[in-house]
Structure formats: C-alpha cells, structure tokens
Image (cartoon, rainbow, N blue to C red; front, top):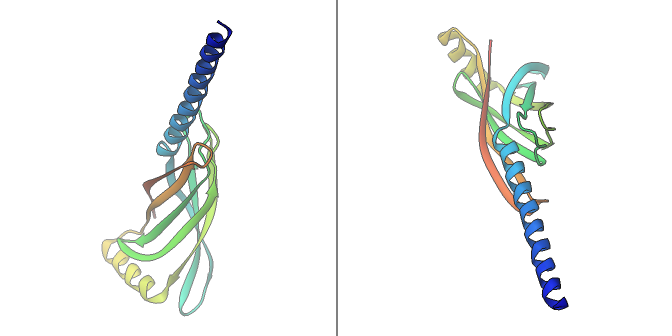
Length: 155
C-alpha cells in the first residue's frame, strides 16, 4: 500500500511539473509573438564622404502579462524601398506590459544613400523601414524559436 501511494505521489508531482513547464513555454512564446516593434527616432551620429552613421531608436512593446525571454534580432534597413544597410539588436528582455527602447547603430554607404535619397525625392516622402528576424530560446534556453518583424519611420 505504501508503494502505491509513493507511485501516485510521484505521478502527481510529474504532472504538476509538466503543467508548469508547459505554461512557461506557452507564456514565453505568447510574449515573444505579441511583441510590437516601432522605430521611434533616428539620430545621425556621424558622416563622412563615403558613409553616414545612424542610430535607430527602436522600441519593443510587450502587451502581455509575461516577460519576454531574452531575444536578439537581425534586420535589413530600407529607405524608400531600397536596401541600404543592416543591423543587429543584442539581448533584449521586455518586462510584462512594458516597453524596452534600444539604440541600434547602422552605417549607410554613399552609393546606397544616394540611390535612396533620389528615390525619396521622386516619391515626395521619406520612409525608413527595417525588416528582420528575432531569435530567442524558450523554456530556460531549451527550445529555439524565431519570428519575423518589421517597423517603419515616416518623415
């Protein structure tokens, strides 16, 4: 009889642990998938004859009630539809129901910049867009996940 109670208790503990781990995976994936991305500003940090250095101010908004797992992001930068650069966001965590803002340095070389400026002048508007992929790991780093994202800035 004692052995049977021990087995039942062990099974119950395993079920509780599995439920908690399942909820953790669900909550972390929901927080990552619900994440909103925006470019809230652009700063020129330097320029010379061959390139321009910008800092994109990116905001990540988490509308869920669970913190995101740490994530990185890689993206391409477009001005008026022309790819001009790329960038990387490293190790961001967004608390539940909050925002995290990061400054991401990017460099645009003169050839791409001139093409994009001509296109922007012809279109009559300036649009900077980023398109990329976020990478994270759920369940204490055990499960890799990725998702695409995009954000734009109009002036």
